[in-house]
Amino acid sequence: MNFDDALTWDGELTVTRYDPQTGAFFVVRLHSTQLGPAAGGTRAVQYASLADAIEDAGNLAAAMTLKMAVSDLPMGGGKSVIALPAPRHEIDDTTWARILTLHAENIDKLEGNYFTGPDVNTNSADMDALNDATSFVFGRSTERGGAGSSAHNTALGVFESLKATAAHHQMGNLYGLTILVQGLGAVGGVVADLASKAGARLIVCDTDAQRLAWAEELGHTVIGVDQALCTPCDIFAPCAMGSVIDRRVAAELPTRAVVGAANNILSDGHASTILRERGILYAPDFVTNAGGALHLVGREVLGWDKDTVEQRTRGIGDTLAEVYAIAQTNATTTDQAALTLANRRLGDARSNRSTDR
Ligand code: NAD
Ligand code: PPY
Image (cartoon, rainbow, N blue to C red; front, side, top):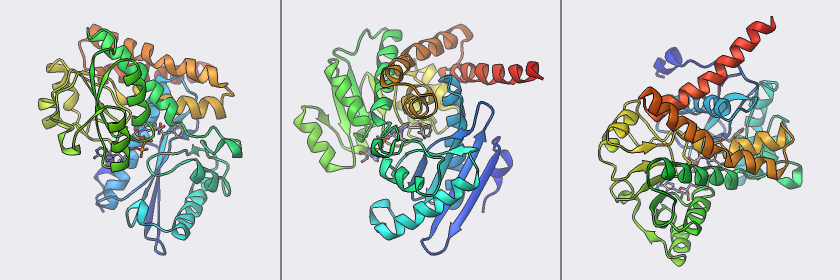
């Protein structure tokens, strides 16, 4: 086991558990409870090593802290990772049910300091199953009284971010722009749809042939997944997985802007500097993909109706414009500017607490 991450991570708590019966390894990481209980989804994927799973959970939990802070939501940041013994589609129903039962136990033991929700490979039906054994779950099905899938709202926030980015970067509106969407899943599919209706020309890729057939029927240009980082476009929209842009990719990506749904798009602290030097406008992911958090926390914690959730999600475009303005004023990367905005809120919470005493 590599302990480097444990020694350098700046979060509050890491919980791990191994289940020999299924081979699943559970990681729950609470990065911050400063603004409220930590919240963030449960991701169930295979990892090359347990150390990778722990590190991924830590990076994702830290991003949740920033997402909640920039979105003005009264929650902290956390995330669960279930490192699976096989690809999700190869895991049978009985094994999956046991994995969810054990994970519900993990969450329940945290006694409300952490709320989970859907993430990669978990959905509202899985949240219903978790809810059989713990109440600290967002995103149950609407039939079970939950907020349901957050994907549509996440896509709406990404769409607003595309518009705000085009406007700021002298590209006008989306009409006639070429947008490359990597990943046509629950979020990327809707992003492509909204952008296409706004007059953009879509280039798309996915590993799933069914999704590509649907895209072709709609008249989008389909490319191979290995072409995603070398096909020229006006805006690159990563909506599949994170860590797609390291410093090498940043130096060559043939685009004018990056706006996506994926968490932790940049795998490397230096990538944002290189993008900036090349004049590529990067929309920080924890700002653009906050529509899911606004939906789940808005509906289930703050009692917002659908219109309020939509109005707040459309406001993501204004938050992004503020980030771009800070970056210009401070002559920093947009990533640094978004951190400044998030830390302002985290700092306000700290100073409010000390004046309360
Ligand atoms: P999803 O699983 O529905 O979609 C992902 C899609 O990407 C699938 O169609 C998959 O086949 C495709 N894909 C996988 N590997 C690929 C590759 N190498 N190249 C191209 N396509 C590939 O997931 P989703 O809910 O649409 O989420 C997409 C991303 O957005 C994830 O990174 C997720 O963490 C992030 N995100 C989602 C939400 C939400 O509300 N769903 C909120 C915040 C962030
Ligand atoms: C994310 O937005 O990345 C999530 O993990 C979804 C989420 C948001 C807020 C609470 C729980 C899950």
